[in-house]
Picture 1: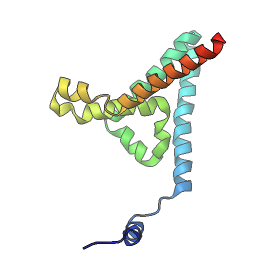
Picture 2 (picture 1 turned 120 degrees about the horizontal axis):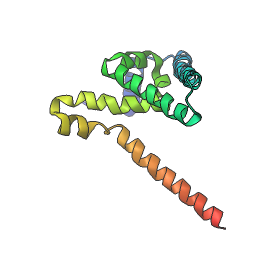
Picture 3 (picture 1 turned 45 degrees about the vertical axis):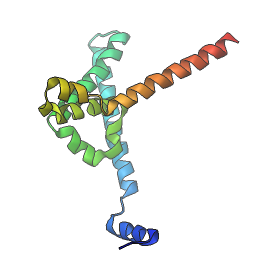
Picture 4 (picture 1 turned 60 degrees about the horizontal axis):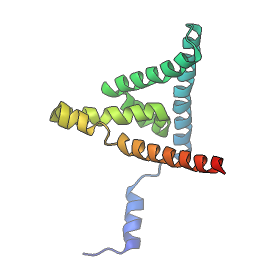
Amino acid sequence: MSISNSDYSKMTDKASPNSPVIKNCIKAFIFGGGICFFSQILNFVFQRAGLKEDGVKLATPSVIIIITAILTGIGVYDKIARHAGAGTIVPISGFANAVVSPALEFQHEGFILGTAAQMFSIAGPVIVYGISSAFLYGLIIFIFRLY
């Protein structure tokens, strides 16, 4: 039995529900903005506590990473992500989730071959291409500053 491409497209369009794009964008904006707003509150708290600027720059993302890792570990972050969509991919929290999720998923395979080996399966390409892009960008800047 063969189906033409147009018939197959019609079948998939009929079977897949339309996603509410505007509603999803609003949710992503609210949740992503909420994460950023919470980070800004942490900034103010750390400044009021007397940390110097460098300490605030280290403490704020560290707390966000720890909170995200804990929420991922207890299964709450995934529930939030179902509603927030792209809003939970705010860089630092999304990266923490991308590291913790595979580590939890493969923990039954042991600490070395499971957790440690799979920890960067999702985040690894981001790290590799991020470092490669930064190197290339730095090289281009270096070359243009020479001339």
